[in-house]
Length: 464
Ligand code: UDP
Image 1: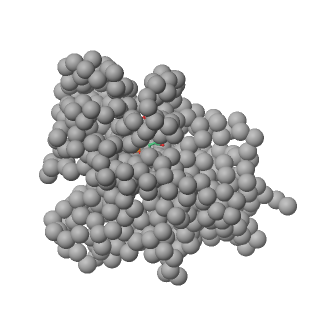
Image 2 (image 1 turned 90 degrees about the vertical axis):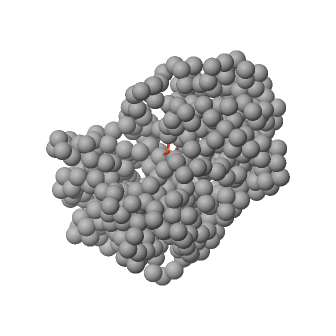
Image 3 (image 1 turned 135 degrees about the vertical axis):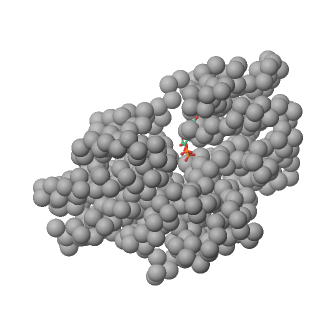
């Protein structure tokens, strides 16, 4: 029998979107016999992407690539904000993606098409071509609940979220202060506001939504999504990285080997999060004052230049900091092998920007967190972690989103030695066990993936 053929247009401008999707592709091929075509564009190229594509291409899996012609944005379009730029790109890319889909299916029927939530314009193309289309959401099920409710909110509200004084309530989500909503949504006059809402309003047109979460992690959100009015939901996560491009992992893992069990706080703000130099100083002094061990991935801009990353660690850290904390702290510049660090027995806490991949990686390794969201939907992830499942200590920010040194010290002590931290650790350990079970035969993720595979291939008989 012919293998079911699925085409995918990944959003590779953000590795946090692309990497979990690449893991899902491997599962579809490995365990469910799929043939996959990735439609790619160099326009969204990131430095890590070639290595990921190379690994997929050199695997024995049935994965092919179709590249669309290069897209050029006009001069005035290049300076637009991220969302507006992506929209301009999509407008120009759509006819090419349509051509690729047409030509692909002339040689091998396409049973389904998978797209990223930032590319929902393609739903119009696939409706025309009658190709069943699914969203792959590299974020929480709670965010999907929010997106499905967002158009109604916006139509009923006349002011910006940043100006309201009530907490936003969505089924499946704890009440959330408006300042913790995605940054693009804060201000109605922001060009990204409409971009975000437009994508949200198209979610319901998808035949199904594949979500990088697992049922036991987000019970309430998944229950809220299980209504006939919602597209089919597949909690097919956690999709964690099985390969890493970190050049040298050994020095920091050797250092961790020397530390007592569960004694080290890992501090990291994701693959590109940057905090100000002033904030780095307060974080450093707070960490030092806490007296706890830490492994900190520091990333900051050069002094007076907010676009070039500093390459000299000592330029970023307060005078004498490294010497004073040498016996209990290690600072790395820009990057650490996060998954091996989180799974190391010496790691006992994670101060994180709450990106969704970091959140899942922490949960699957049973590491409780301190939440320091920087933007995107990270404030909503914080609400899940702190209010809903209580596996994290919240870090208080002032109105300018600055975290003072005393607050860093308090939160670190609370997580690493306080009662709240003890409870968070216990719950995270339980979650780690649940994640393992979800991934075992008969577990929720394995079942959801089997359902998704059946649905992604079902239409082979009906289309083309
Ligand atoms: N990551 C890593 N080392 C680092 C920083 C990040 O390996 O020093 C990985 C991390 O394990 C996660 C991803 O990069 O898989 C970050 O994704 P997330 O969704 O947490 O945040 P984003 O970078 O998209 O804001």
